[in-house]
Amino acid sequence: MRPLDADNTCASVEIDPEKPLLIVDVDEVLALFMHGFGRFVAARGYELRVDRFALFQNIYRHGESEHLDLASGRTLFDDFFRFAAEDIDPAPDAAHSLRKLAHAGVTIVVLTNAPPHAREPRSRWLAKIINQGVKGAAIAELAARTQKPVAFVDDLIGNLDSAAEAAPHVSRFQLVADARLRGLAPCAPDRHRRIDHWPQLYDALAEALGVNLP
Image 1 (cartoon, helix red, strand yellow):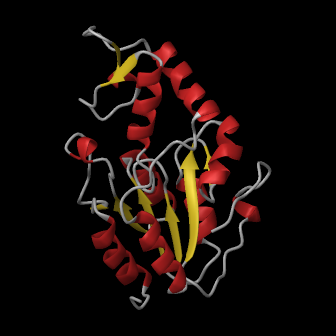
Image 2 (cartoon, rainbow, N blue to C red):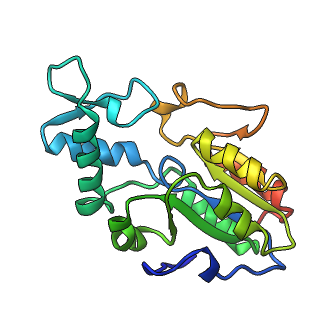
Image 3 (cartoon, rainbow, N blue to C red):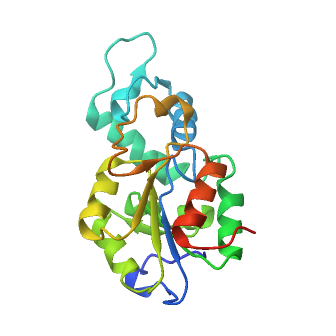
């Protein structure tokens, strides 16, 4: 994994056709986004109440029962990625698991949805490709460039369904790193395997990718 500049696309990422490939999301997979975003909105006089698997509908003014309007929520979201994108804690055991998989010979691509203005600060936080919209097309493009097994990890069913449609041979895993969101997150275990802890996911990924555990 290495930082990519703003002009990089999937085509510019080096994929070794003789190595297994892991494509992994960032927010609520590698990073505890809701914790960082919660700190950001609190500093601006709002509170984040995690009572549904949503973002803007969880932002409230103190003492109010109706969530913030979506336009104001979007402004806070954009400002977070403009001013505080690096203030996110890593998900427990995520970095360690990725390092072990990399040492086992797995190519790792970090694929995340974020506003375009987040490219530079996020590239300082972790190597990534900035992606907007569902991820199926990007998954298929990357997966087509290796002859070895490919796996994809995301927290959102929409992205996993998109990957299943565009690249059905890719092994798909759902992980929700924030414990507050796990019971709220939609899941489809008949389509995508759900594992919410990196040590267990690491074992499953190693098996799916056909690598020996270090």
